[in-house]
Image (cartoon, rainbow, N blue to C red; front, side):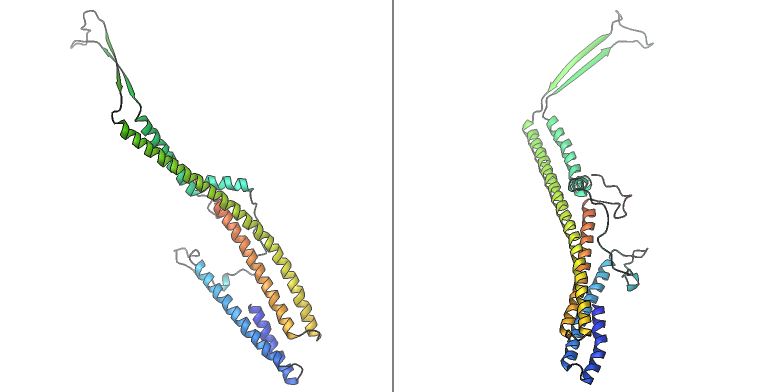
Length: 292
């Protein structure tokens, strides 16, 4: 947009001279000034969005002591990204399996399910009858440690004790409650896994579509630039008018901005994919372990 604005401003000087000499109608100068105002508005809106993005980025871009830093123009790259970020994308089934294995919300539900399995087993065991076997061996010795039994025999005792919980109704209630919690948690984990699967599939669709749109946007930029150059040449030869030239210039700029947005969309889709599959290496967090 700034480039469009500078073109209109540079053109104004030449148009003023042409109008003064009578080579161009005064309406062309009025139209160019209208273009300048419109392009100033577009540039101002873009500047506003740029500064807002810098402020938002400062939440994550900080100094070593944690102070938020607002990025400046000096930190901008020399050129815009060439295209979609490269990197191998795994198959949908592999991506879903990876996400289910590492997603923290599923890991929490799995841990809760394990605890409820233990609790259910405990409640079930409390309902079972209890049979205790007890065995004892007895032999008498005097103060000197000498066998004191007349016959020198050892006495042995074996006993069995059978017990049955009396409050079985209460125990059954606790078991039913534990089983209900376990089943509810199991269904929650199943639903969460299904949501993760749908999320991964949708992200892959978005990534594939965004990558295709980048290619289409590049073709559109090439065609728009071809039309702009042709119209500029026709205008220079007197075969075109100022109105058409402005349209071609703005169409070419819109195509370039559309391509950049398509690239951003594709890159965001890739970031979402890496986040959904908990790809710590892509985020520079490979030393952090997340157990699924």
